[in-house]
Image (cartoon, rainbow, N blue to C red; front, side, top):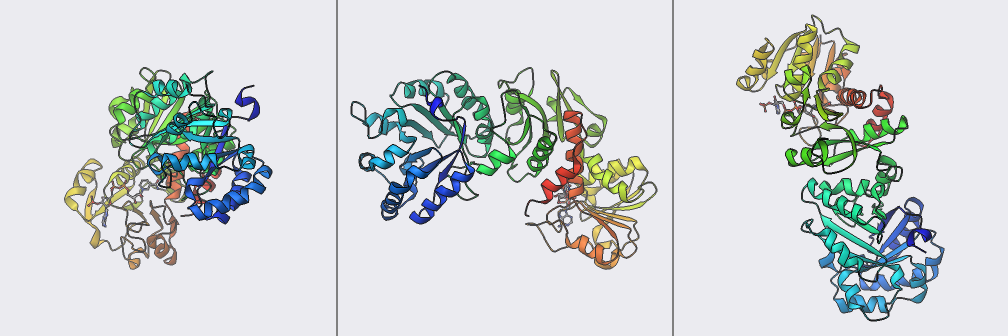
Length: 512
Ligand code: NAP
């Protein structure tokens, strides 16, 4: 009988990392409700709490309805305690038999497995996961390492490595592929660049993936929560053929795009997922994962959002760039069309559509505040609709090229006194974490303005929008553009109209 006959693989496993015995035991019952398996990280418990937790478990372990994995890891291998090999052997040898019988698996680090060679192990080898961790890098010899570990009598091989770059994920996927039909494998890359291994491992044949019970309770870096794995990325519903979408950027951990696109995919019952891809080197990512002619990963990647700092860097890799993206010199969307990569910019339509639902841009006097990337998309959209644009900037010299390009004028931001039908803030002034509570212009200057549009979306109501509301202007916040550009991306990738209300709810329900 193989292990998968006794356990319904694949599993989402929640590690318990509390340091007090009562909280540790309570967390197990909490984890049992959301996860498929629970890892008891006994190394997180100080000596006195450990005995208390063992006592609590002796009576309760048999009643826990989910498979339990017991781990007692030394600090140098990713654990939370200074433990010698002797300490670890003594712990396992002294494990109460009721607990040994109740657990599904014991995680023995490779050196511990080797130390028990030729002896009767403290738990049967059929219950042992042989684990190995590398917190510095993802080495190139993972398959050879797997083979060596699989030669030990343990039932499962676990290899977890640090992803220093997203390209490291390729070696984890190669390992999972290699292990097919052999000893079950748990393989993952830690760190934000490794997230795709955690989200896609199950669909590619790994036995389990780890999810924390809440933010702050992770047992390793880059670990998503159980709720994210199950409800946002829907990792247990994915197969090798599922459509993959994602956002490439550097610091994509806070991107709201996964919330919007995954909600949209789910609501349309599409077999697909949208993931954040932390990419430092566009060249190796495109060659290794994206371009159908060169990619090394056999997956059904359908499209990408592109964000800071790659909106320009992606262009040389594209087989086609649409006119809008060419005109504003930035691509925020890649569609995989057959063997080709096509680039688009949906920021213009995303920004203009909500604006035009409220005012007629043709002939309107529009004050654009700021002269950076989003101002460029806005100026392009406004110039095509025949609006009269004035750019207000703190640095007129820097703003001049934009004004020249769109045949408009630049005025010092300080001298803004009103006289516009529409005001659009394209600066970060007022943004949470930047200058929340501040406004780029004085409230008095808003009196005769019809619409004030702030591209910032955290907070949803900026100081500028609050002043505008109080002055009786119509207001529009940055979520409208965020959802609008994403909806257009969704349409380009799938050919279907995006469920805009679903995307809007998904993104605005997230606490700020
Ligand atoms: P960007 O390219 O860096 O441009 C920022 C502009 O703001 C520059 O012209 C900059 O002037 C100006 N600026 C910055 N700090 C200023 C200050 N204290 N006083 C006066 N001007 C200042 O940024 P971006 O991509 O255009 O983004 C701008 C804002 O729009 C951000 O807050 C972003 O969150 C928001 N945004 C929202 C969406 C959405 O979907 N809702 C999309 C894109 C952007 P200098 O050149 O002199 O530094």
